[in-house]
Image: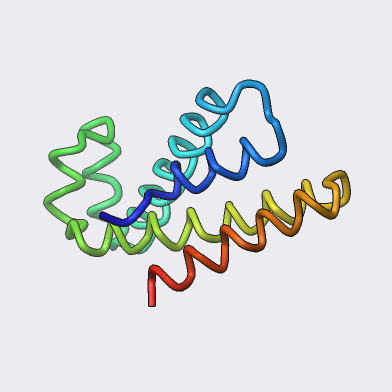
Length: 114
């Protein structure tokens, strides 16, 4: 089984010795999920968007219009982008050793996805 982005993020947070890893990773994952859902809904025709809004974003209503594979693809894209932005943001304060460890983890993950 492939590690999730949350697992990868937890490993990176461990490397940089972040104190509240689980909380941060859970919130990070939730933000990515919400952004992916918003992106998917924005691509739908306006009348369908209005219908989803009228039903207060009911997940079952959304599933009618956003195929599961499309949703997963969007979450993957959003998560990849968010992780890259996070790494860029923290890079200036990381030690060379931390950067090397994270680079090793990222290369390992890249090989796993190929």
